[in-house]
Image (cartoon, rainbow, N blue to C red; front, side, top):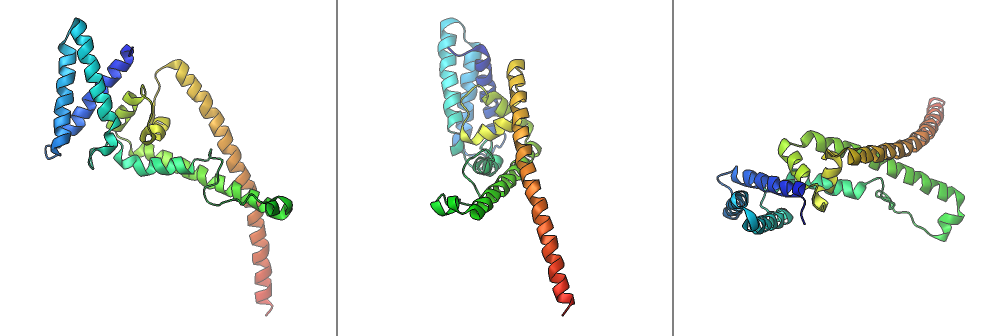
Length: 230
């Protein structure tokens, strides 16, 4: 049985869908028809009582959820998270938590295992790869926060009670504000561990950056001396 809080979230989600789809009087006919249909279902559900109310609410919830699940098929300017689609897809691909490198492919063969120098270089490549993804994750996550509107945040909040889909998984991660203290505390603990891990990834990169900086300075000094002695 659907909990009362989930019921409220579904209704709020339906009301927001109706509001967004009705904003543009020039919008496509199907979207406007669906908005009117959902609005009617919500009105009937709110006015009904007893057994009829439960049956009407069930139909109303199913209608809203089916429409929500099909949101990716809405036309341009009507999809709830349209401007975040590319960012979300990119963040999923470049996540620093992915084991598989993003910017280079490590050839796991006998040569790389036996050749110590090659093995060290591949490990450094992995450190650089991770650091680049940490930077991009941070930049994109900040972009999501700055680009988010009140409407987008409401969509995310009302969608927390449902199984997250690919297009909102990232948004939920960066925009969700859990009002439940127990869940909030757990989220804070997880964020602490995540940041500790990110710091370690960046510190590994900083250490090698210093080595590489010194190498470039030495090489530059050598080349300058050669050039000046000619």
